[in-house]
Length: 315
Image (cartoon, rainbow, N blue to C red; front, side, top):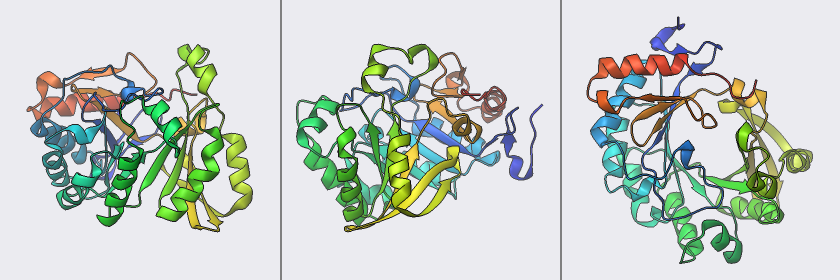
């Protein structure tokens, strides 16, 4: 039986509250990044309508969820993205954010802010055109457009802006200092992300080829830091470093074999095609809600079951 406290906040059987949703809006993208896990789903043209997304958000909000992260694929490829944000804002007074590759931000940033979006995470995994093009695997090199997107987000006050940077062996691991400089100059938080895999894929050729442990980088940053704080989600360390280009915050996302990371996980995932998903790294943890969208009582029932089924991946 689930514990409930004020605001009907639900806890899983490991005492972890669920106060945030990570909603995948689509499973397509105009990039083909070599490490993309597509939020643990396959590429697909199926997705929920704005009304269906609002149904899910409304139910979750009743149970104390007050933080929403929209992801994809590339969520800004949805023509109804502003409507989705507006419908979500009706039920959420807390933070609503979105992860994007930044290509569509020059034309959408202002509208997103007006619709109720608080801030953005922008994926930028290399600052030179050669590696950026290699990582994103696109016909056109979009690096200048992404930088325009960052400027548009700044001008529209979609901040604090986080720059997502997945560290990869022999590709971009020598660009950390360059990214620190870039983020200091652009008043962005640098989020260094560990290349991850589940247990079954931990010894795969791809994982061995690209994985770089973050600890050596973190130890170097820690020595320079003037202060440290913790993001409650996954208890991530965030260091403030004073550079010649200005102060910059650097956050470390270290999911691999990290018991503390899972211990502090407070989110439930929603897939684009209408399923609750308890964990990125699990493959058989789906709770189908597509057929009951529009029936909030049934969504509530499935939501409770999904929260109950949450189990820390690394224990």
